Amino acid sequence: MGLKERLFGIIPEEDRRRISPHFDVIGDIAIIALPENLKGYAPVIVDTIKSYRHGIRTVLGKVENVSGDCRTARYEIITGDTTVTTHHEYGFSYRLDLSTVFFNPRLASERRRVTSQVQAGESVLVPFCGAGPFVIPAAARGASVVAVEKNPCAYRWLLENLQVNRCNGRVTAVCGDASDTALLPPQPFDRAIIPTPYGMDAILGILAPCVRPAGMLHFYTFKNRKQSEELEQTLTRAGYHVTTRRRCGNVAPSVSRWVFDLRKAGHPDRNTEISGNPG
Image (cartoon, rainbow, N blue to C red; front, side, top):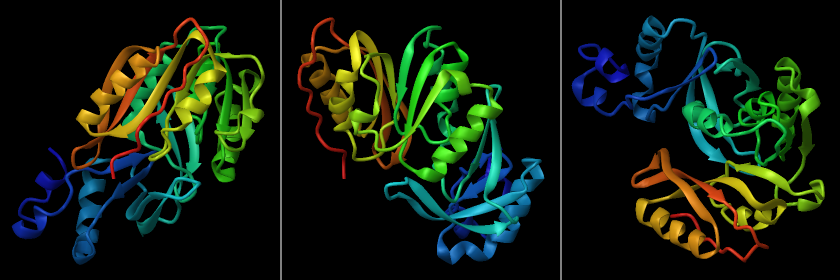
């Protein structure tokens, strides 16, 4: 039974139907999106969440979606006294401040799917790495990882999480722009995991030459279904073998996050141009 069902008979039906049935939990923090004219129901919604999600200490209301170079959302504290938490995912711990760091708990199974393909001894590039949820599992499997993050707050949490998860020796952390390939070592990578922010699809063409021929790229993008099909054709024409194209959740009506698992051709790169994200 979800949140909306648990509010049956507590909130007037007309208002209950307008409340999202979904909310995110990151560590001991719950995040809800509540329309301005329904904020009067916040106390009863908080009580309902805490009644069946034990361990929740803070509830945040999302005020603005993710935006800006640091890819952070803006929240207001409905109950609790901090936006700092520790999130546990498949045996790893991620400490972070949600007011300054982007983290999507809905990608947990996807992160596990991709990082489970990493082999010991591989060299792996992870741009837009945030607090490390792709980086740390890859390093734990024995890979040497270069992790790039532009947001200095996220970078500091990354360094702490590397220490907590005992991955320091296998990760080179870089605080900088993922599109600046001068920050990367000259040797090509065996694999790149690219959790692309919205509107930054050009990063694939920038980073693909940093992966060796026959290496793997896991490229995330935001498209509707038709656009994802067209992109698969574009990537195939560019010489990639698309081993997987799968949807990783909706982000807006008809727009989803998609991941493409790509094996590069065993020859030098061709130019790959990708159409922009749906507006």
